[in-house]
Length: 374
Image (tube, rainbow, N blue to C red; front, side, top):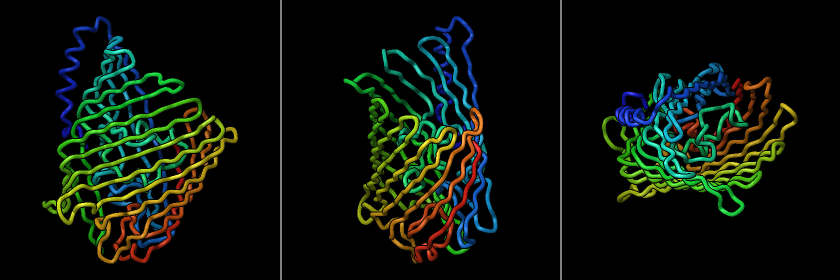
């Protein structure tokens, strides 16, 4: 969401004013940047490929696209003293109908207890294993995260409060994140015939609890995110309303040479009457890679299974959507990685595509070719 919609600007300003009473020296400010330049093309002109439902256009065979994966971001970390710090992150990418700047992080942090931090402002929703660097392509081995899984929860940030506790639990390093506030919302785009339709998702409140355990080369994580009184609005009227429950579990092994990772998610839509369960779904991915020096080939398989009928428009199919991807990452120099990826996307319900539902009803198979510089 745009900065003018954030409720945390006055909150952060007030918090910084409180901090100033404790600050005796100039704060330490460190600024870093990240970016991806990506190009995508496909083997069809019947649908536009995109990396998220929040994108209003994408790539075809005859019109390759530079906007599906490209983004440019800046992050500022400010340390005021041993107790107070602040983080701001913004980036430009294609989502919610344009490519204007978005503020993803803007929060004040207080380290008031040993191992525990409290945050106030705008923060990421820690829904997935890779949520903390979901927008930073260089920090990920693949060219893009699997849409079947990461496309299920599109509210990447929220305005509110968060606690982060880190502690030892026997031989494990544990992290517990508790979050509460208001989701920043999102827009989704669908095609029917030659017309493009937009929906706007809003929610009264968001709550999230996430626990991760790390030991040696292994990291495991479980999470639950609850959005209350969600309304999906199109044309000025609510077409779906209910409570959204999102469960996730992930496991990663990385010894510096071999990488293997998997996540499984469940979505349960709690609503009144006929809408109850209409957006239920489950999805998972499996990915593995091997590092040969600066080059890492990898393979990913992901699958989305709709359980409710809210995903089906007239003429479309309830069949699961599947993607098989093979790719490689080459770390050309320090902080610069070149990636290439080939995907085969098949099945019915297709969040990756802007296309008429009748096309998805035929359960097509589409080849997607991508290259990116992170």
